[in-house]
Length: 297
Image (cartoon, rainbow, N blue to C red; front, side):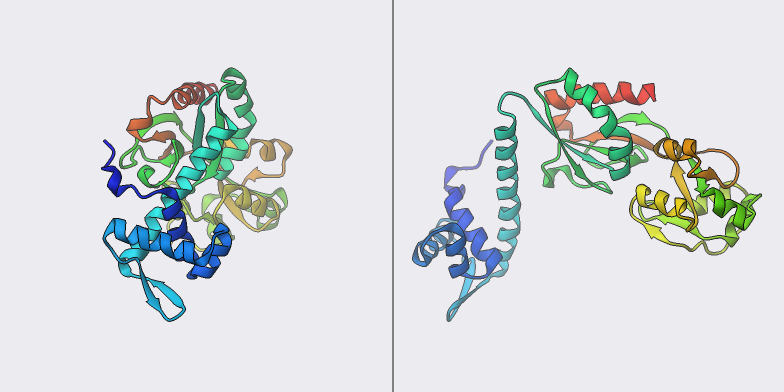
């Protein structure tokens, strides 16, 4: 149920407020909105009267947000962004649905993108917008319909659909392997190890699972698998990489297993969505499609 209309200021008032709050200047806001300074000032005053609260402190020729105004500006800025995004999506696809999907970067580029054409061919009325998210977020605060999640089956406020498990390989370049003479798991303590920021304890778990005693495991940090893989190819160290994301590099021989074979990850890939969006037609179609794709490998 929508709140009373008296609590819903017009877009023009909110746009004027957001512009002044962001620029810190009535003059700059007026220039941006193609209005006169007096018109912008009247809109700000009208908004304050409607809300019954002072949004700015006027000091000579400058304005400064009050504490309440600063909090209000943050929420209004996000609301205006979502309205703009929704309008852009509708304009881009007026006859079908739009699915805003958050993806993990390497999963999106290496696994999802090459397959996405099949989904679009099967669902010609659907448009998919992809954005990158490296960790979970609050669906209530973002205009995202669903997200690819890697981890344990836990995301507060979201429904999870299992997609696939994961196997990893400790990989390096052939030259690096020859140079360091790696033959057993303990040898990895004497070479540079490449770490992913979103999986900071991955190497510790791998070493423990392989019975290797250690104190500290240091090395370079990367925020994406693709970058870590390229660093391993360049001979900078050994990286723990999902096998399905580096199949081409392994087949070409750019990367080789430094020791042993694949290791089963304790975490898996899921499709996450807020419960209230679960029956949204484009999302429902995508969920069914990606689940079958994941089963097929």
